[in-house]
Length: 166
Image (cartoon, rainbow, N blue to C red; front, top):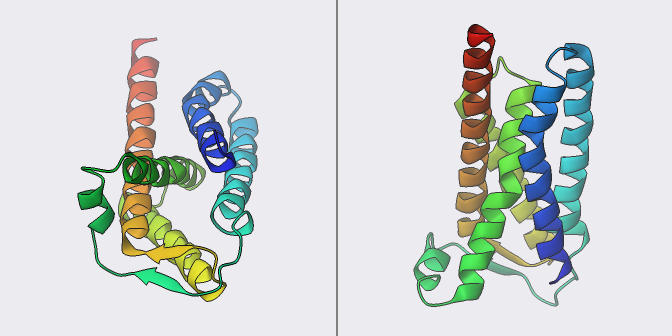
């Protein structure tokens, strides 16, 4: 298992722990709020490390602007399926954590923020020759953010129903 896959699994584990942490600290809202901010900052640092800082510099710029090329290729190539899945997984915590930290934001605002963070990352990768800059990463990362927002909304709905039943 390479470093990127290991860190992706770590981020996935963190994402799965978020509802548990939220539930455990639900009666301590101030502590929950600051815990969420700390986890969000740790996530952003891990995201930056995975997508920018851990990448070796290439000799040339490379950009793929054709949308869904990797999705089509993923039908035949397992490594493309893994890359797409890892890009989605990488941004699920972003959607969850940002929406949790700033619950008054509209869901689409959080998704746009995920898109902008991904666009920033892809631009930095292109400018500093740190990998392939591609539209499909924007799509996958934005989809991951949307899934994270959905998980947050699902958790909040379950928490509200649990509170009503208690």
